[in-house]
Length: 492
Image 1 (cartoon, rainbow, N blue to C red):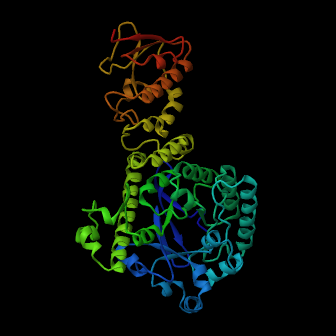
Image 2 (image 1 turned 120 degrees about the vertical axis):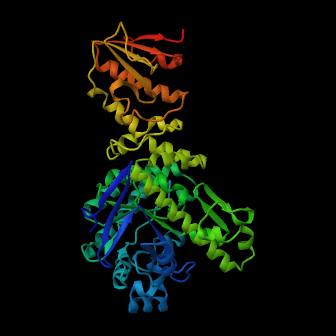
Image 3 (image 1 turned 135 degrees about the vertical axis):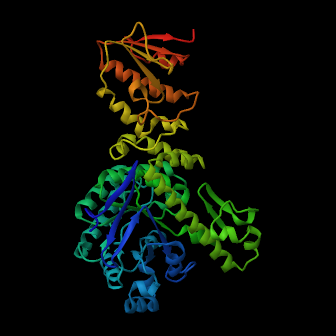
């Protein structure tokens, strides 16, 4: 089981670079990672190329499609899944839940399909869960979750075998059910925790709801739980999902989008038919022009666009790992959020969970860049405000926005003000997070957060005489400051 065996090397926000071992194939998987989806009947890109060209460590295929096809089933049982697909890495299998969601019923039981996954040599198997769609009534979601858990319980006979078993986390858009499902699945001792039924939210660009579901799931899991976001194949949302705590993704998007001539970027999706130039330097885009690819036979055209889609997806995960390592993941999320209004909604949902993220977020990392309104509510700001009580203050203190002021004849001590953090003693001016880069003209929310920091400091020290010297701060912000704080405008 991966619980206790998932080793975290670096983290930033809820994102982790870590690794866990796959017992059956003796492979080590680094996170965050992408599992390309392979249709057992149609290989847009061959599994062997996924390994040799893209360095894919792990892929996912559908065991139900294999099970239902006599030829495929016989071949997979005789050869084993790895030889059947000709893939040297680890292989995860899905159970047919997607077909269940699409068609309403399938003719296999959960125990039958999970036993079949074991028989063909799957590295990570998936029980037949009920993928409850978004927005269904709470009672329906609760009843379907009970069915999923009955099936998880019946799958426990294969726990602690060489094959890892995933426990899909369901519950629709009801956050209490998602958290409950995660807690119970974790307590049962399962290995991987996929967040299920996310595809409708992704296709509808409901990133706000998606982030809330991820955060609810994380609240129910231990820190050593490997979290897989089922069906999340578009690279533009990888950074946000990793920052929320997802470790694994699976992508059929690279092939499905290519089939309709859609070209993936980290900013969104372009249509091959409208492109004059490729905004990318991957091997495909460096070799061909859009017009050249448009003239190719459909299968070749589809294959090349699918390759580009995978290159850009794997490249984004590498970029995310660099960001985690240097402590700039939230900066990357900020940049990616500007690609679409729905992405901003997702980013703001993430920021709303700053207190949850702050528990894992490193206390010291790369210089913070305050480049948007959302920057003022990041976990780093919350942590700073939570630690203001650690500072000692003198009896008569000047708080000033004039960073050239280092002493005062009428005050024992001078502190500077830095939005969005607020007051800080001069001695820590070169200490993280006060080293943050901020605009010359702070926005209203940044000033409000700084005022929150001032209020915390003043209220913690009721016997200290504080004077706040500002330069034309908004009246609305000043009026919310403590009444016992003397306020002067240095610009008048």
